[in-house]
Figure (cartoon, rainbow, N blue to C red):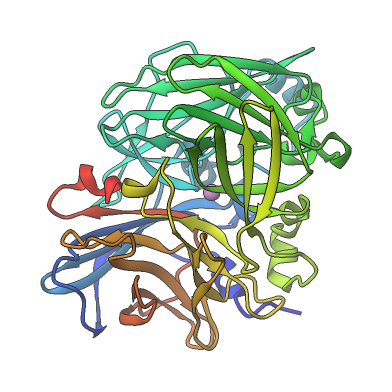
Length: 477
Ligand code: CO
């Protein structure tokens, strides 16, 4: 069986010249800027193929909205992973679930000089005054968000060690970033939380926590006063990462008997204030987090287990799996006085790649989360949802044979309500074999415009809207 969205998981050429797109409907006059998106766009190199959706070579996309309409361009990120693929005609760098075939000698050498991939195919952020593409190695790749030209790896000016990080740092309105790295070693590995001040490239370690079996975490939580790592029981013996020769994620084991451990740190000092156990679960994405009296509320798009990681192998994904439950919005409440945690499902509606009105609601109590959802089993990402996390009610958008990606909320500068604005999503229309930029009114969740591209655009992970007037401000809308 071939999944109807399989075209979105096929290699596509880049379109570096700006293509004007026809516009159906009308865009709000205040919506001027560029939606930049990141995701895999090439899955074969010579005779080699990547195994997993997360491994494909990064293809950047830009939808630019001006007075004269919408235009589109795309370019492969010229990472060393991409450049070596071009020159060697084979996969040369280890990825999430793909490893190049290596001789024993090469494998042993890799233990001493691990070569981390710079195939930054996950997200877009602003770092040290530049726009960068990020993945889960600490090798952000700078690029020009308008031409999509690659500018090179951003090197940190510090000695913070740890080969694994998150592509989802948190950010304050002044540009300060918070994030973490995982430093693998025996007998203990270390989670290191850091702070990166705006326009600098020196990560300052805030605090750390040593564990025997580090967890695979894709994102984390931040409130006004705390940072929290939700360590799911998908764990690894760090020596295995170094020695088995298996691709990175295949060294991790699901050990539900361990439960989920929530490590809470003070945001200012990095001091660990508690580690609290809760039920086993898995998530890629946190939605939001905030404080309520002596409680931290941590909302995430949670799965009952980590099967989703296996279902994202390209063979499984392209064949249309039906046996994995969608992530649901869950709230973990951590009581800082009692050192206990409770869990509550916020809605029965499935949600992935969740977004909020980040500038207004990050670290604050909030009402709306936007995400992709699933209506038909096996159709993976066939709707967009807007969930009211205070009631569990949801608004939904779908269309026949359409597969939308992460919805990016852009606030109306004259708006007052949390959902005054639009939601932008790149949608694959599988039967038309092409994709379009979809614009929904964020309040009604109804379509107000679309701009069809002449070709299919690979399904992609994450993006940001860059405000035309002030691109550096765009993360805060
Ligand atoms: Co992500």
